[in-house]
Length: 298
Ligand code: SF4
Image (cartoon, rainbow, N blue to C red; front, top):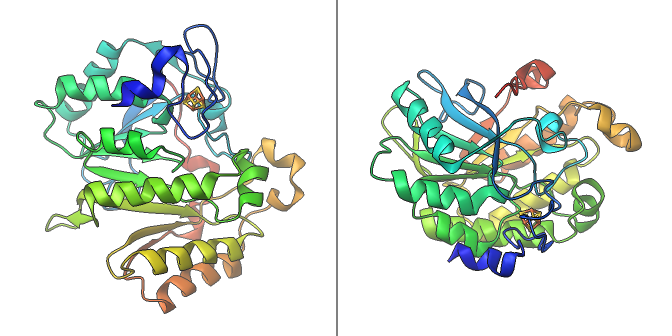
């Protein structure tokens, strides 16, 4: 089904629908056809239900279909740092992570490679014994989510903004909430609420992340209220992320040139707690530090 999203050589893999011919040039995501990897390795700093044992087996991809102005991984989202690889190499890297003892396979920002990922996962699906996680910015197409759900155990989307003004200003995507909430709906239809093993490690379902931004906690609260209206708050797995720190790229946006205050972060967390969310992962504010950004050394 996903092949239809790239028919006639025009890429419409993601809601950006930029229609680039990626054989000849780049799309909004910055990437041509093929796959570019920025990092492969164990990652210890995801939520505890994902990073456990030896760590989450992450594959970070270069480029991004959102390009948020405050991106903490700007070296790879904007800078596209990494190495072009064949699908065969991607396949080998995934299997090597599993053989090395990764707790899961965690594809980070894979949206603009989802067609290649589907082909790779189809070839190795009989060999993968650990959960496969699709870790994305939330700006996904329903059809893509549906196609991926045959191979993905856990969807790990962001839900970044409720306001179209904010999503336009910071991620050039006025339709972000419409697309992300549709995609989230499809993720839940396909995988359901998060399921864990006896040690609290996620095995299947959806875990949604929300990064609290400076001066935008009211938007965060609107996102929580949307979830309350549409899902069972007791079962909805939510990670409220506090790791925002300003990068060089933020200079044009004075309101983004500071960290999130404890007051702002607590307002969001308290709203979640007061409204009955029971499966919430809350981050230590000390994790808002550039040192937690991995080396993109592939
Ligand atoms: S994946 Fe990239 S090229 Fe394709 S529609 Fe999205 S932004 Fe455009």
